[in-house]
Length: 161
Image (cartoon, rainbow, N blue to C red):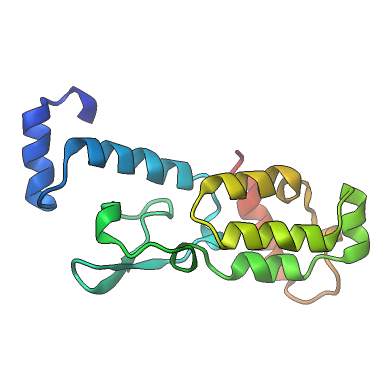
């Protein structure tokens, strides 16, 4: 039985028991919103986010396999959603090797900044289609952080858009 098939009154009572003044429509909208974020690798998303109602940090519902939280109870800003891992990962790109993708490293870093400064999945989708899906270990300079790079590349490959 799906949640959409439950009587609207019963669903409202169940939801309001957990979160007062929270409607079924808000719940379904939030579920769709979080599902769209689950296409992004977990390494790029912060582990915790601030819950205003409880005044504590709670597991981020933007990551896969974490508990649901209504958006209205969270303090949401771009810096609370995105982890700094994406910027660190892209920092190690080689300028010369990025040219093989017919772009410049500075353009890539601008796209990363756009992602990190916004709360919309569309910016990440653009970055993914432009550059992330084409990256391999050969695009990085030096031998530093190879385990980190391998982990990020593996997570990008496991989260196709």
